[in-house]
Length: 269
Image (tube, rainbow, N blue to C red):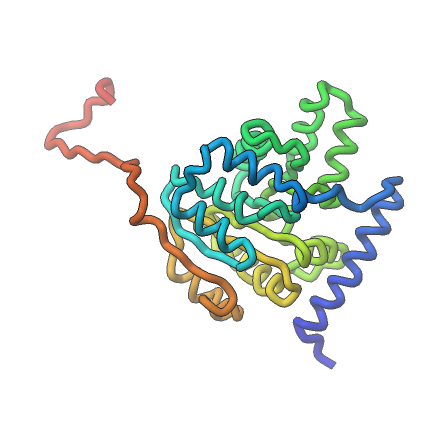
């Protein structure tokens, strides 16, 4: 008989959790995960203190709607990163980005600027980062990397290829879907992905809806075609997520244009 998406999601949940426990026990760890920040909300408090509780509109919106799926549009420099971290509200979360370099930057920002040490970095080159952090201690670096791969940290900064493998229904990837059931995932700059990756993301979010996890899309540009395909996958605005466009509410002038009718002087540039 045909396997419906609901049945497949239930299968991913059961097998994913079994794999998670089995792999952690096999690696010799007493617990599958580190304690989340839900009790102390250390990251949220550090962000609020850093910006002196002077939250911008997008940040207030995300903080006040931390229990809902959200899609927000806000210009670069308007505090979208902090808005997304406030939306996580101390719950187990994943912050996804298109590039390794941007992942490294956000990881460093969370860990050092906002003092939340219990953060993981996960991409194809993150092992080298862990070795550098441990001053060349290969064993400690590897353990940190292994725990990141087992999705043990309360907050993980990663590229989407590390997290949305389950959309292809490959056996062994169920742990990602199972973990996302009780997590929140942030999709930063979704317009940066090529159509293949964007399709995988949207389909993954529709699976997340069935599983019961939460998502937030934060972007400077949200092409209407993305909303169209979200609807095709059963993600309906106001029903499954709330949308807010803050692009016209920012007072920051980031682009200044001057037109001159002459040849370009490269030395002047």
